[in-house]
Length: 125
Image 1 (cartoon, one colour):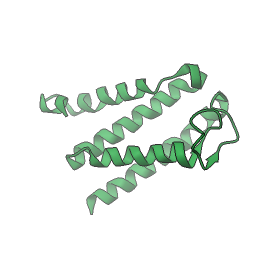
Image 2 (cartoon, one colour):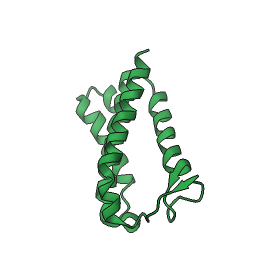
Image 3 (cartoon, rainbow, N blue to C red):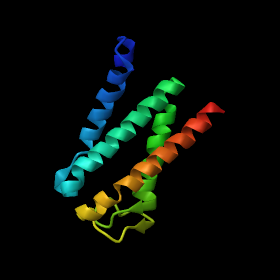
Image 4 (tube, rainbow, N blue to C red):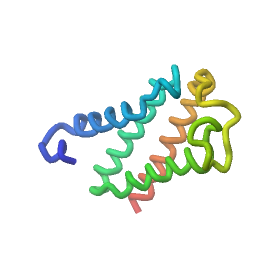
């Protein structure tokens, strides 16, 4: 919001925080070769959260979206070897299985976009 308050272009005040958010999730020690894809996916999440904030004028929808997304990723379905201790269900592969993780990224992106569109519809009402 501070970048927007400075009068900078919308692309700048959405992309800079989103790229930083993505880099904070870059962890090749845990995710191996899939780490750049995870960071890219997280950057996309940051863009979506920034857009929700810009459209609503408050951080509330972005925080709620992030909470629900993390709830799914940690509590509902998790990896057996990474943050899976609280999960009701665990995947049948490790977070270190780079090929499998990368192959599921398009599904993750599609689900993220579908969830985003659902929130956008809810914000219109």
